[in-house]
Amino acid sequence: AANPASLLHITLTGWATPQTEAHPRVYRMPGFARLSDGEIAEILSFVRSSWGNQASAISPAQVAAMRKQLNPQTIDATAFETPRLAGLLSASNADQVLRGMRLHLQTKALLPDNVGNALNCTSCHLNAGTVADGSPFVGVSAFFPGYAPRAGKEVTLEERINGCFRRSMNGQPLPVASTDMQAMVAYFDWMKMNTAPGDKVAGRGVGKVDPGIKPDSQNGKVVYVQQCAVCHGDNGQGLKHADGSFVFPPLWGDESFNIGAGMARTYTAAAFVKRNMPIGFHQKFPLGQGGLSDQDAVDVAEYFSHQPRPDFADKAGDWPKGGKPADARY
Image (tube, rainbow, N blue to C red; front, side, top):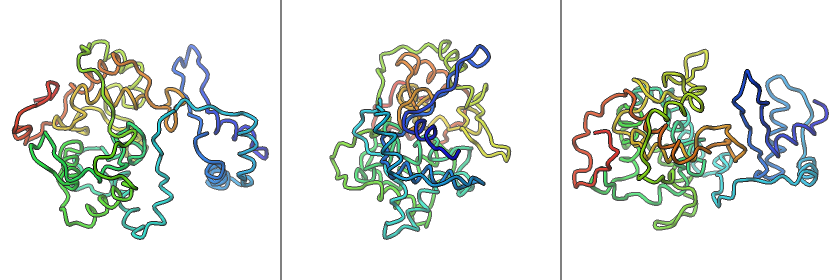
C-alpha cells in the first residue's frame, strides 16, 4: 500500500486472526515494539521492495511518529537482549560465524551425513539460539568446559554439540577439528558477548517446572490435538514444505529425537513447552510463544515424549556416577 500506516500499526502492536465457528483457534502475531525505529524501518522497507513489491521505503521518523501515536506496550519484561544477527557481519571472522549460524538453522540440509532425522539445531534452540528460555546460545560458550552429570565428567563445548548430534538429531558426531565444527563453535563464541564464567545470563536454558506435578497423558493428548497438531501433525509427523523439507519438526517417530535426548524427558520437555509453545499463542515478543498452564505443559510433554521414537545405543553409559533423573526414558 502507498500509505504504510496500517503496516506500521500491526508491526508495533501485533495482530490476531478472527475467531469463528469454522476457525475457533486464534493465531497471533506479536508486536515488535522492542525493536528500534531504525530496525523496524529497515525490515519493512526490505519487505516492501522485495519479492516483486515496489512500495516506497519507510523511514525511522515514520516509525517514531506511529510509536508516539500508539504508545505500544509489551508484555515481555525479560532482561534478555535479543542478539541482532546482522551484527555478525562485522565480526573479524564473519564468514566463519555466518557459516556457523547457517549450520544451526539448516543442519539437516548442510550436514546430511551427521543428522539422522529431520531436525535442525533451531528445532530446539529457537531462532538460531536467540530466544529467551528457548535454550538460547547467549553466553553459553563461557560455561565450557563444564561438568555434565549425564556424562559423569567435564565436557567441552564440542563434546556437548556432538551430544546433540547423537541424541537430538539421532545422527553421527562431527570431527572436532572439522571446519564445520569450528564454525559452530565460532557462532557460540560470537554469542558469548561479554559473558564470563559464573555469570548469570537472563533467559538461559528453558526454565523449570515443578517435577511434583503428576502428568495426565490423556489430558496431554487433548492439549496436543487442540494446541500442537496444527503444526506438528496429528501423528507427530511434523509439517512439510512442498519440496519435502520441514516447516515444523516431527515430535515422534523415526524422524524425531531419540530417547537419549533431553526433550525425551517429561519435565525437561514440559519446561520448554511452558515457555515456548505454542507459537502465535499471544503477543509476546518475538514469536508469540508459550502460555500453557504448568499442568497442561506437563501433560502434553508426557504425551508426546512417550510416543515411539528411536533408541539410543549408548544409553547404558549415561549417569555413570548416579543421579539419573526419574523421568529419563531408560
